[in-house]
Image (cartoon, rainbow, N blue to C red; front, side):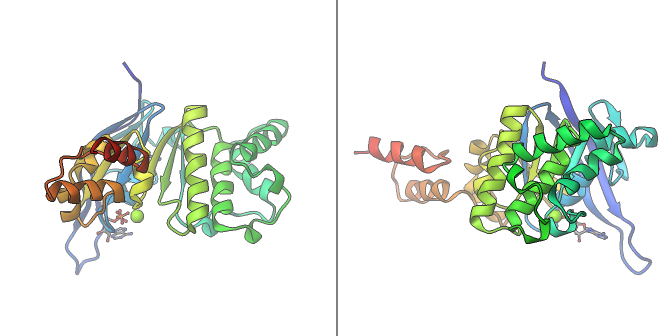
Length: 281
Ligand code: ADP
Ligand code: MG
């Protein structure tokens, strides 16, 4: 049996509406588990409730109904708050809002300092975390002079320095150029694969979602599809109805099948596509 990192059970969340407005569920009866060491991606168009559910995973929000349990700790138990925040770190979309210091290494030290870690150990954690995201050479630089992708890697290092078991990333690449996006995703994957940290990645990029172990697709506060990327993306019609894309190669297969070409429908990347096309001859 694999151990559970995060357990969301029938979670609903209503934003407190003002008097003139109707109360609206941002998340509505969502149930899922994330296993320790898993890389889960959450997809969905704007307003589908992704950020709201993300903020439940480290007790930034508490459910209106249902429960969220992080490594055995119920987020509604206020005594567990710091333990939960130390276990589950969050990286947000805008790198500029996350960096607080004027020197990279001071920024990365900020989290462990707040945890009351011994200065000697902080030094080690900062160096180690910066190396893990390939930013050690930049340790004396000013964060505001770095590229968006580099800033996000610093933000990731800041979370790693707190030695979390789990990292939740809410569209961390949305403001980056393609090369920064690729770099950040590679480091996220490395953190997952090499160090076994559980990753929950919220994204609207299909190529990023395709690299996860498992996908959840949200719409209107609910989970609509769930499964391995290949299974989820093979629902091309459904994804399109939800206003979402699928990876380009998956779509190409779908169109070829519609034209009567008998081709496997759950292809995820160019290499697989090439293999399948070569067998058609
Ligand atoms: P996503 O991250 O998928 O774009 P969100 O979780 O941000 O979705 O939003 C889900 C729903 O909750 C949307 O209808 C949005 O308008 C609403 N919402 C989000 N934040 C607030 C807030 N602070 N106050 C009121 N409503 C909000
Ligand atoms: Mg969002």
